[in-house]
Image: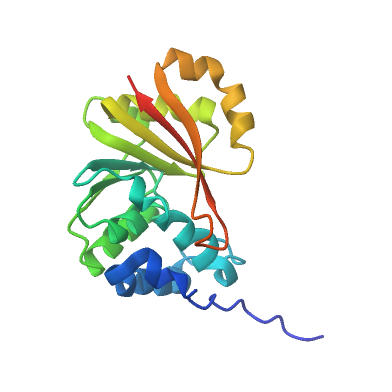
Length: 214
């Protein structure tokens, strides 16, 4: 019987420099630390290292151009910092509030924001539904949190009138939209669209549900 070989961190794709520009060194530092401590802290699964750059870091980073210049963004269910910390790295002009209920993950987010010198990040230990009276932002992001029918009512109260939801979804996003039709109408969302980001740039494109809050 042979010993199993531990997974190896995916080599940095050449396109990372294009996506992150002069912030690529910060992105590298974050990726290496996430690879080193992610499984131990329950942030990523044991099989994610060989696709960490492609499926997680770059997948999050291609959302950065959608953020308003000098805007205020709340990232709901930040977890490992995907996309919250990655967006804060890519867009230092944007202020990110990372919302995460689990103490272990909050500690990770705070320590990484400090270690990486991200002065555009606040971390809040809470559930999104408990912050409706405390936070008003221009945009809300979320990745792999829940289905749109549940996620929309959690995120809309955090957004100013005219602001946006930017919710990263999987290949079945159109099905989610169909199931969430009544929720979309009830929450008075306008300009609902699905964007595919990173086409021709990254190996795995990113699908985003984007809508304007009335």
